[in-house]
Image 1 (cartoon, rainbow, N blue to C red):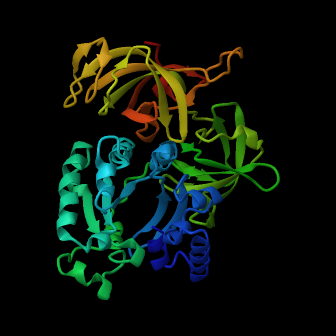
Image 2 (cartoon, one colour):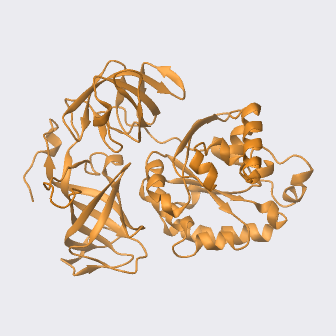
Image 3 (tube, rainbow, N blue to C red):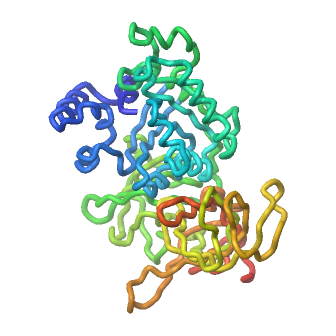
Length: 436
């Protein structure tokens, strides 16, 4: 991605030279292009992406926001935060013999990342088969990887028409924008399809919901100038304007929008689908937490502490039982929870109940269960469970998706079906009803 940004003019020559010199001095000359996005000292010292880096670039017909997500399994929570803001995915695969296999075997990050992005609503994926220059631009190797990946992508829920494969040699910039020059001679002998930029340029933008109330999950918080702070993230639904008063949930805090920045340019408003930086005033920065949601004071997001979810269980070894301790991931927030009741196993085709009140939920099963958040208070402290801002999937798809992890492994994904207990009030009549 660093090389692509350079070729598109988003990374200037001065920065490229500085990165080249710095990476060489650090004994990591091959990380020249990665340093275009890996900007922190720790990322550069360790040679891995740890947090989400945001950049923008333009193709002939698209303005694209790039969310560079970490691939290392230690930073999957950060990857989830980035993927929850994405419309489409570019999966970069190392075609070196042994490297692809290690990522694609059970428990590998290639598999987990595809399951995660699909579970978070991403339906379009471009698979960039990289480092083909290290295997002499072998068509057989490219075809082998495609043959293994296609069935798994379909199994993960991607429609074949929404999946593209492209061979690239990113270090030399081959088949990113073009495949001219002597270095690409071997590739041209068997590949005449689109470049990576061609595929990016043909991605289909999803429909944006600008008429529903504003929902803005906070992905990052920055200390602002003077009073207030700045937050970043993607607007899920609705519109936000400068001067608007907003509520921060969870909590009783309100704030005022001082300024909005979209693609590094100041704007007076921004709508659903935009990745923005918002400068807020009239609020103490300590009251802004990653994972909180900004919304209008007249249309609050329910704060759920107990809810019914419908999930699909992945390839797990230990079944889910009543009382199992898990972690629930929702946008940039992760909270401890308990599977308090297993309600039913479901038919994946039509959602009908196969078995009510099952004893366990095993791998590959679709199920309905009750989840209840657990307190994060230390021993001896008052036990207070703070609800997380969520909406049923039927009301707001992006606010109703969840992931479930346990022991550092993603074990299931699903949707919020019904809120059972919530903190606070909402003016939206759609949530009226009794507890079940």
